[in-house]
Length: 524
Image (cartoon, rainbow, N blue to C red):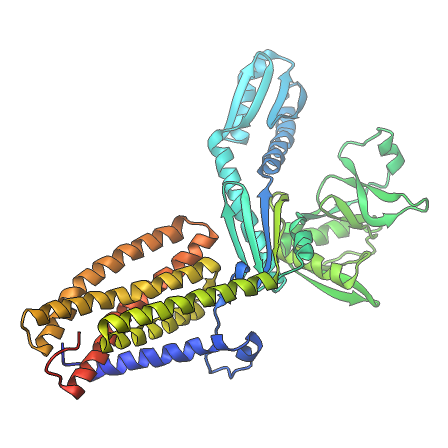
């Protein structure tokens, strides 16, 4: 116990010095820290929403819309397949999340059932005479909802990251909800606008044979629909509408890049397709030279230019009534990808920076009071050894901030509570060691023998106590929500670093003192 190998001493000192260096940037402002040389440590602990202010949004994913969309896909596929098989039917459509229709000849029931099994294996088919009611199985519905929410989370993350928001928190909450926390963002209107758009883009031909008046009068041609313009108005001041083919020439899923730029001094959005999308776009424009085509975003026509010549390069320009900001936002949406389902904002909270500053101040006061109380207790009960424990505790706090800075962890108000708790748990290991040394000294052991026995025999107890707490912290992190996770993170870091400071650092300080002072009795 008395002997410390030189490499151990160097390792302990080096860890302490590096911890001080990597924790030091937290004493600077963010601007000053980023101005440090590239070789110098400059990572800082990220403050959570409750400490620096910001916005929080609770979103709900409309998974029912995805189910309806896929059922409509089944209807489209079934319509062609039934015609091919020469099965006569009536009333084919979607009602109450089910595909319904009736057969003209009841004898075609088994043939129809087999046809739908080939189209979509995971269907629940109910037959009542000539009437068919078809829906997805429960297992398929659960999987569809899960995939929709997972994909929505990823798209939301891409959109938020594109805005430059630092350290956002985006996580699932429940089965169909997404929690978005944006620290430092006090005006969430732009984020709400970006997240409120599904951003499903398609390129479709305009139907030149039908006017909007024909459609309003109920004369809707098969395969066309009426879509409003995004901002254009007629001479009478009414919004302009377009009759657009339902058939999609090229989907926005084929886009690989989109950037806001300028053309003739006006903001526009340039885009580029992948190889397959570029080929389809080139073929479509080549076959329809002289015809107008519509660029449709979320069922609104952004623009409807005339195809002057084939566009074979796999790239193009979207022009419209854009400002610089709206062009940048559209490019962002196209780069991030389309949401699989619409999002509804259920709840919005804004935390002002003043409230966050008050939370930080209250947390610092709590930490200071806890530190003073621990210091007074340890020195009053253990004297010089209590000073050793306080020094180890100080290094422990520094190491917690070092770990959080290097790993990019977010400090929240519950996280500060975890640090305060760690301060008590950190000296708890020292209390176990010191009390064991007292018992050994009362039993008549020499100072060296008492110290050796105190550290060795308390080691198992310290490991058991900290390991069980670490397991509890891991469970809190795994199953807890945001604030609980913040508490679990700081508590876990504190437990791990306290084992180092209590077992290694305190022991090194005691050994150095013992060798230099050579006391006849340990002052405990």
